[in-house]
Length: 223
Ligand SMILES: Nc1ncnc2c1ncn2[C@@H]1O[C@H](COP(=O)(O)OP(=O)(O)OP(=O)(O)O)[C@@H](O)[C@H]1O
Ligand SMILES: Nc1nc(=O)c2ncn([C@H]3C[C@H](O)[C@@H](CO)O3)c2[nH]1
Image (cartoon, rainbow, N blue to C red; front, side, top):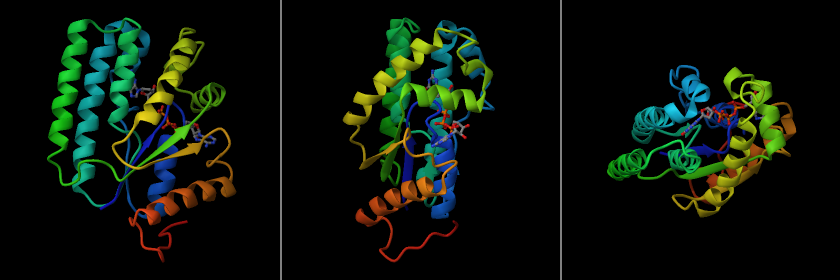
């Protein structure tokens, strides 16, 4: 069983790469609840009111998908649970959670992480992080077009996104739950360029082989 998790800021390309990678490896993709998430639009409308609720919503759905993924065969997940705390604490740092909510959230996350330790597989096998600059991030958010994520919906989102990026750098450096690799999302356009896509897939496959998670003579199931 091999479990790969993607990480990276909003619009970095995690869901897109999850689709590409899971097809290439012949495995099952697991996606974060976005379009069927009733709290996300509420959060963007009134972040202070809904930050805690949104975080509980994400934690709950993420927990279910991780449990399914860790008991199933090979899988690719489009966001890691380790980023949930980053999002929550960044929002808390800008006054969007009370100290009681912070304590409750941290205790709940801790209990969930302890629960995951009893699963057949405790941690993912590999983290694939997509690194993007602010300009790339904004360009992708615009391209995808979710109304509530746009700067003209709420101009304070510029600060929010810049802050998010600044939290990601130390987060990735400190991540040590599994081996990790970083993809340069500014340089590699794995959506439009076949060559770039293959370069990203080759990098991931080489890492999996190096870790003995794929046989040396492995060939892609789909291309
Ligand atoms: N490497 C890339 N090159 C060009 N366009 C990309 C790339 N990756 C993603 N995109 C485009 O950027 C948009 C956002 O991608 P995607 O939804 O995969 O991001 P995400 O990281 O899953 O976002 P979120 O955190 O919001 O779920 C989509 O329109 C996608 O087609
Ligand atoms: N506040 C907050 N906490 C999270 O844990 C979290 N995870 C994802 N998101 C938001 C970002 C994108 O808009 C959208 C898709 O990733 O959902 C989050 N927002």
